[in-house]
Image (tube, rainbow, N blue to C red; front, top):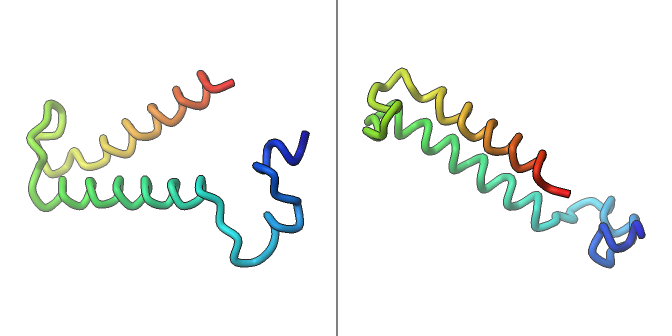
Length: 76
C-alpha cells in the first residue's frame, strides 16, 4: 500500500537527496504565482472587487488559504 501512495517509488528513492516529486514542484510554482500576484497588487492594484487598493494585497493570501483548506476538506 505504501508503494501505491508513492507512485511505485521505494522509500529510499523518495528520501534520496535531489529527488523532487511533481507535487513539490507544483506547490512551489503556485506559491511563486501567489507572491507575484501580491507584488502586482502592491505596485498596481488589480481592480477586482475587494482588490481595488494597494493595501488589499493580504486578501490574496487569505483567499488562497481558504481555497487550500476547502480542497483539503473535500479530498478523500
